[in-house]
Length: 121
Image 1 (cartoon, rainbow, N blue to C red):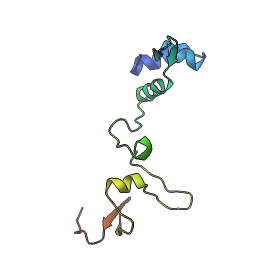
Image 2 (cartoon, one colour):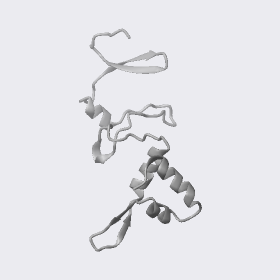
Image 3 (cartoon, one colour):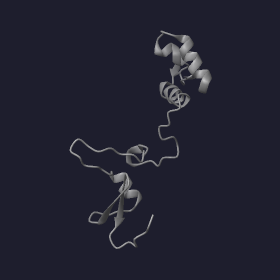
Image 4 (tube, rainbow, N blue to C red):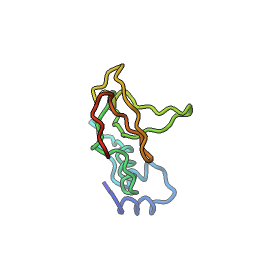
């Protein structure tokens, strides 16, 4: 299986051919029990993203419920709310009703549990 610069060069070299042909030519093929071939598109696209320098969480991210990898990023929703999901609160063992003080810093928001000692930055 090609990776890195070799993978990028091969994809560019292949030009305008089918995705299946590109995946096959780059070596992302395995053999099923019945002897037929299986194209490993997911592994191919992950290697392609890595070759282009895109880091999409890798193996260092923790796994939340349902096997999803936690990205430790979020975005402001359409209604202006900022959501922290259940998987993250579970990592911190937070319970319904836990209270926090919101501290605004320069381009950052900190949530400090009420009653926790105040730390200076």
